[in-house]
Length: 398
Image 1 (cartoon, one colour):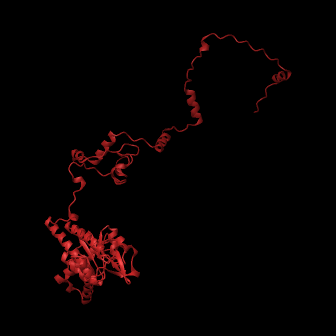
Image 2 (image 1 turned 90 degrees about the vertical axis):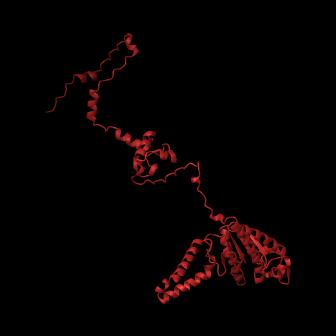
Image 3 (image 1 turned 60 degrees about the horizontal axis):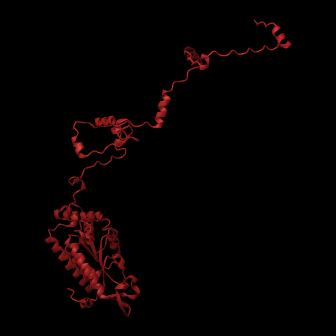
């Protein structure tokens, strides 16, 4: 049902909004007037949003991107499923499983389980189980088909989402915004247009309104797929990207080894080639306070002989580089070890007697004849001193 004029949209009832009491004030720019208790949507704004959505979806399909159609409302299910199947795009019409985008790997694992059950049915392996087990497996299959059958072809995250009534599909909108996936939505007067990238204001409750909008989007996607096939059919998401190190002329640099990567007995440990710490160990080629070991390129690594062991390389590096400065704690320990032990008092006296006295330098005044000093006059002896001298010495006791 192609759109030839605004009258086609009016005949499909696209301009009917919700009741006035249920409106969202953010939709005021898209509302023209109200009729009794129902808002009337401005169809010019509808055409503007529809044109933007058509060009956007055509470009996405031309680049090979996946477009996920979402519509779980009863009037939208049949339309969404028909449009998505014609475009060969994934769709969700039963229930949006929380985490379908943010936890995509888990959803893929459930799809793998569905394929496993189907393969068991084809090969007849399911007949080996009991009737009760077969009934349980078939119940699981029906549930998986109902919820995940539309996204079997969604082997990677979609490039965009097309949603009918984003107020009901609020979980899908939140996941898309979290992953920065653009959203195109048919939005009514009771929804929030700020969370939608390309809003198409219109009636999202009538089947005819949904059908006329989805048909236009379907034609845009089909044009984009034709352009994609004509260009060679290589999606942008699937193009192989060469790593930066593989480019010509780009030098390969070794990653710095992690601290403690050598382990006990590994290269570059404490005091030599083996021990804790890898190349950053104490006493190795890169010690605290010493210069860093230079990074080697691939050419330098190729130039080395094949038979040279890593232990020899570490020894050469230690010989070429200056020895690391000892730490103050270790210096103090060495100083204490070198000091002589204190000798007893008698040994010290003997050592002092055996050592010859150092010759003293003669003073300059000794070379010249010194002037004679006057002798001091004798002091008179008192009577008490004379009596003390006259006393006999005491005899020693036997």
